[in-house]
Length: 209
Image (cartoon, rainbow, N blue to C red; front, side, top):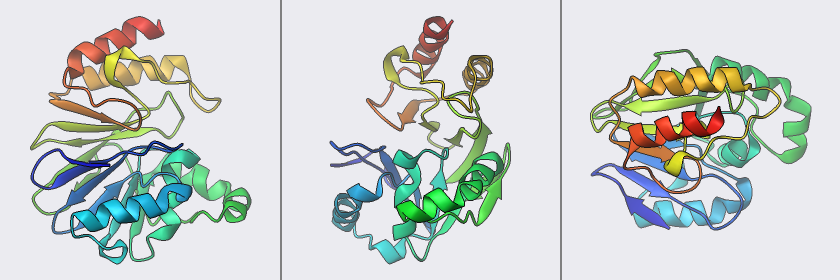
């Protein structure tokens, strides 16, 4: 199902295993976390509803390296793949496994803290937020004050699962960093969109301690 969040930003959800995807229909058409390759047909169909063909997508942004967020990368042949440099290193080091799964393992753009992604009318700033995984990041859109949070922060104060590459200590520091931002909506990788960002981040901090 596809929902319009503002004039050029859309949210695509799935009932199957996989992450939400966020579409920015700007001068450069970008997708944040295309999700599971097994959900590709649904993603393709939802994109077509807003006049986007697969070949129109020029940039894929991954919030971290987990398969439910990145395995559909391979389907976007005309797109550059971008991720934080730590995520890029982990994806590329997993080359043999990823090849077996049919996942594109090359990251074209290795980003850093405060890297700016200029799509035209919208600009995204990378916020490095390790904790759920060592490579986790968020993308902050300052114009609409949207935070694309991947698996770092969710609605209702639900803490992220701390995977083996992450740590609780890093996670708490990342949440504190996000509290300093002026956020209108949190757009997570799973679950509900948050319209109460500060409240939900504070509640997550409380719940994770």
